[in-house]
Structure formats: C-alpha cells, structure tokens
Image (cartoon, rainbow, N blue to C red; front, side, top):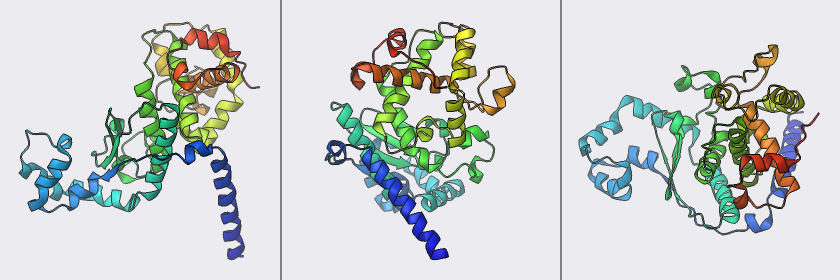
Length: 320
C-alpha cells in the first residue's frame, strides 16, 4: 500500500512538473546566462580570523568602515548570530533549488527586458529584517535567508500571522520578482485609487510573465483559499468599488483598506474577516490582464501607460 502511494505521489509530481515546464518557452529555458550567486552568510560565519581581510576585499560594500575588525569578529561568536546561522543552514543546506529558480527568473527578466544587467546575488543573515528581506540595486541582489524559515518558526513568534505567512522559502522568488518590478514601475504621484490599483496590477501582471511556473497564489502572496475567495467574489468586489465611486477617489484611507498588507480587506461589511488583505491589488491585476489580452502592447510599453488609459481600453468585466 505504501509503495502504491509513493508511486501515485511521484506521478502527480511528474505531471505537475510537465505542466509547469510547458509554461516556459524554449527560447527562455534554453537561454544562456551567467548569474553569480554567493553565500556570504556561510563565508562570514566560517572564515578564520587571519583570513578576514580577504572577505572584506571580496565584499567591501557589506562592511561599514566605522567598525573595526574586532566588532565583526565578535559578531561571528555572538549567540544570536550563531543561532540564526544554525537555522539558516538547516533550511538552506545547499541552496541548489533556489539557485536554479533564480536563474530561471533572470532568464525571463533578460528575455523580456534585455537591457537589464544581471546582479550579483548574495545571501546573508539580516537579523530577521523582514521588511528588507530582499534588496535589489543596479548591481547587487541581497537576500536575507533568515526571513524564509517558515511562518511557524520561533523567530517569528511575535509577528502578526499575515506577516509571518510570507516568510516561507516558497516566497523567495516572488519577493525577488517584486523587487525587480518596483525598479521598473514608477509609483504614481496621482493619489487616485485607480492609479494605485494599476501600479500593483502592472507589478502582478509582469510577475505572471516572469515566473509562470509559480502559482498565482504565490505571485500575490495569498494562500490558495484566499485566492479562491478573491476569484469567487470578484463581481461583488467590483460592484462595491463602482457603487461607492472609489476608482477616481483620492481618499488616502483607501490604500490602508484595500492595498496595503493587512489580515483582511476593509469593506465595512460582515464578509471582511473572510476576505484576504490587498484585494485592490488583485482587482488591479485583473484589469491589467484584461487590458493586455485586448491590446497589442509589450511589457516595456505597459510600464509607462497611464492608469486611466489602461482601464478604459481594458474592456474589463469581472468574472461571475
């Protein structure tokens, strides 16, 4: 019986892998890139004191000059750092799967945005700075691995659950993709709710193209149950926005209610506790998707299109 179950599970995984592979065009999967990935977290904790200068030469941008070597060497022996390192090593003993997914992500990025330079990917320990767990500059991608130990990890015990739920290793690629999108898409100066919805809608649509092997739930940071709720209630959400004339409103409270990270969205109705947070981002995603399906526009051209133009040309109709 056990053997049968294992065979069935392997069959399901094989089918799932084939479906995911089908989503990636060969011109992307076969693309050659040279992505440099370094485990600074491991190098820092394991280097001998007499070789410390070599580490500083390799990563000068990670060592503030106002601190002497003794401060850094003491950090190597700090009990909290040792515990963080132990937990990161347990969760990421080799980083092979993550490296493969990062490479696949950047194959997509360089395919759709060929002028974008590949960054040097560096993993580190950030003292659980979850708000800055991924930092992308023009030449560097810094990933704090201690922010991906699993939502139930004891390091996250004092956090709200809706925050901790995003600290799973499965979210790493999505977070990197979001960081890339934020470098491309300018946040609107326009305070109009629609403009902000379209900003997040662009981000999610681009993520859809950059990481097609990932689930839509991971792209937006929902559980599968939360995504299903959003899909099943799309028409009611849209009616709520239209009837209350929210799209062209400049009420700054709308972001906190429907766009910002939160345990749930704030309609002021009984269904609030059932809803996922950031429902306005989901709706923006649906509108941008409808626009792209109905217009011949590239991802690069999408970046600078005004929100109102996207909305008017989208022919958006919510699913029922």
